[in-house]
Structures are given as structure tokens and as C-alpha cells.
Length: 199
View 1 (tube, rainbow, N blue to C red):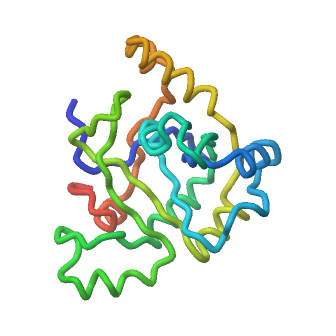
View 2: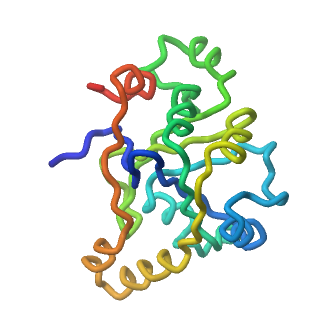
């Protein structure tokens, strides 16, 4: 089955959704141990969360890029994730969503940014469908850190294991142990807000 051009795919259950971030050891080890971000985490900066494991692997180079040596799987309540989506603006002008440049600029007071980037395969080649990235700032960062997080797991070992399988040519095994991600349900109204055609 063809994947829609824009679709949120994630690991989730009735209560929580998993998003991914990559950090240096100073932040990641403490976060995974204590279930919350330490003071070294800068709340005043925009922080991007990614529902797609493979897009996080692409971004962090299998958790090998400087400052991204640890990948965290962060479970957040679905109500929080959906609050972020509703309180979002596109990071870039999109003619399919915005009537004009002025409308887009007016939306930028929102505390959340979204952008749709090409999804990646295990070779990091771009796929024809898009993956959602969600940037949190201001009130959204505070809610994320203090209200939404219900669990943090360091999945760097899994990242390195899959990287090893891909490098050795065992792509089938690599896909078998990837976190299972399914289409995340959104209402027609939220789909329209996110630029997802057809609801």
C-alpha cells in the first residue's frame, strides 16, 4: 500500500506516543536515569521531537554525530502531543496551506513549529513520502518537560545494532528490529491544520 505524502507515523498506544531526540551524554544519561531533563537542557531553545525513528537515525548519523551520541525514546502523553500539533505553525511558507506570505507570518506567534521532511530508509535515501518534525518553544517546551513526559529510554544501543546490520548488508534483519510505527490518527480538522490532504 502506498504511504500518503504526508502522514504521521509513530509508535503509540492509547495513552502515549514515542518521540525521539538525540543529545550529548551530559543530558541524555541523566534524562534516561531520572525520567526528566537535567538543568543542562536549555529550555529557552527550540527543541525538535521526531516520531520517526529512522528520521532520527538520519539526523544523528546512527547516534554518531558530535553532540548527538545518545538517542532517547521519549514517551509523552497523546494529549500533549496533540496540543502541540494544534498550537503549531509551519516552519516555512506552504502555498497549499497559506493564502499568502502574510498569513504564514501571522501564524508564527504559535509556540510550535512543524515541518514535513522526506522520510528515510535504512540507507538514509529519501523516500517519496514525508515525515513530521515538531519544534517546541516557549510554553510548549515547559509543558513538554513538566507535564507530558511519562518515560525516557536510551535507545543508543539499538541504533548501533541496526547500523551494524545495515553495514553488513542484513537489511531484512535491520527492519525486523526497528521500532514498529503505525499511522497516527488525527481528526479531519487537525489534518487540515497540518496540511494533510484528505484528513
